[in-house]
Length: 278
Image 1 (cartoon, rainbow, N blue to C red):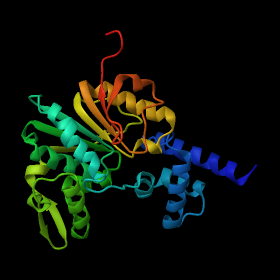
Image 2: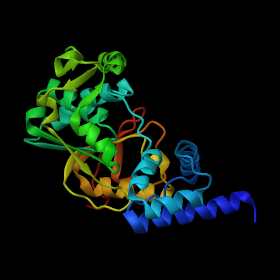
Image 3: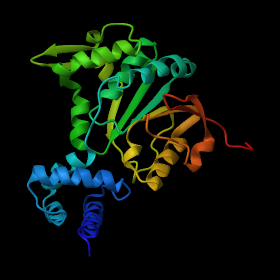
Image 4: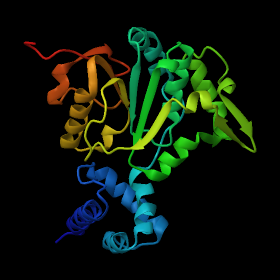
C-alpha cells in the first residue's frame, strides 16, 4: 500500500474519531486543505504521524482544542475586500432599510472582524439600532476573542485603509478605544452582535434572517457539505433575503442555485427568489 493511501486512511480515522468523540465534523472538508493543516499541526505540535494525532486527540481533550486551532485556521480582517462592503452599502442595505427589524448572520465569523465591520456599516446607514447580528463559528477560542472585541493596534492601519475604500463615512477610530498596543470596540457596536457556536456541518437553522454573509468558508468544503450549507442559508433567509459568499465560491453547481438571483455578480451577492411555480 502506498504511503499516500496510508495517509488517507489515517486522516479518515482521525476525522471520524474527532466526530465521535467531540461532535466536530470535518469529514466533508476538502481533503487537500485538511492534509495541509494537519501537516502544519504535526510540525508545530511535535507529533510524527496522523495516527499520533489521533491517539492524543482521543485521550487528551486539551490536545484536541490545540489541534482545532490548525483545523480551522482563522484568516480574516476588517472590511476585507472593501468593494464587497461598498456593494452592501449601495445595493443591499437600501432594501434592508424597509424592514422594521433586521436579523443578519455572519457564518464562519472566525475572530469577529467581519461582524464588527458589518455592525459599523449598519450604524452608518442608520440601521444598527433595529438590527441584531448573529456571528457563528465552531472554534471556541476564536469566538472568545471575537466577543472581547479587542484587536492589535498594529492591524488598525490596514483596517482603516479598508474601511475608507469601503466608503466609510467617519473615522474608524470613532468606534474603538486604543490603549496598551490594542484597540477595543465600543459597546455601541459590540452589544448588537451575538457570538455563538454553530456548525454548518451538523447544526440546523436557528433563526429567520434577512442577510447572510459566509465568505471564504465553503471553499474548504467538499461539494456535499457546500450544498448542505447553501441549503441552510436558503432555509434561514426570509423572502427576498440576501446572501453574500466569497470571491472564489459559487452557487452555480448547487441545486439551490435556482432559488437565487444575482445582485452583484462580481462581489458574489445574491437575493433569494420564490421557487418556480409559487
